[in-house]
Each structure stands twice: as structure tokens, then as C-alpha cells.
Length: 97
Image (cartoon, rainbow, N blue to C red; front, side):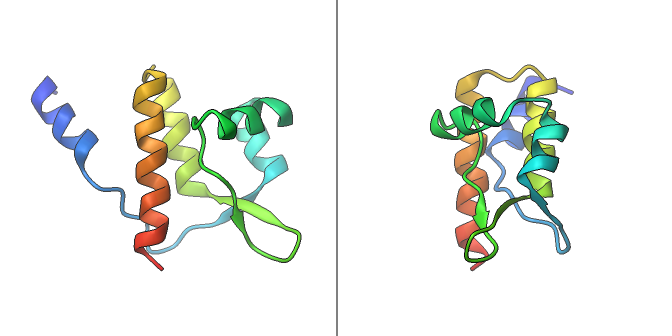
């Protein structure tokens, strides 16, 4: 794939799938392979989206967001590229409200 087509894909808006699952924090940590403190440090640093409230005292992450960020990590994206992806993912949440 050429660099031009890669750039086009990176600027494409994120569209949530029609069906997705919410993953609670223990499963997210297992899928990411990080500790709870590292997970929340990544959220604070803008390297992972904030969780979605699913109840009065419960939060979770949409599975497609976890998958997208794992794919970006595997593809060795820079921190700046991952932060841009996080911004797109969080913006897509607001666009679907």
C-alpha cells in the first residue's frame, strides 16, 4: 500500500460498527496486556480513550476502540498518531449520540 493511501485512511473518520460490545476494565487490561495503573496512565496521557459510563458505578470501553488501539500499537504508530486516533474515537462517540 502506498504512503498516499495510508494518509487517506488515517484522516478518514471513525465510524462505530452497528453492533459492538462493552468490555469491562479487567478484560480490557487482559486484552492490552498492561496493569491497571498503566492503563489509567495511558488515559491521562491521551494514549487511550476515557471509559464510557454504563451504570451508576460502572464503566467500560467499546470493543472496537480497544481493537483499534491494539492494532495501532502493533503497527508501531507513534504516540502522536495514537493520540490523534484517540481524539477521533472519542469524537465518533459524540457524533453517534
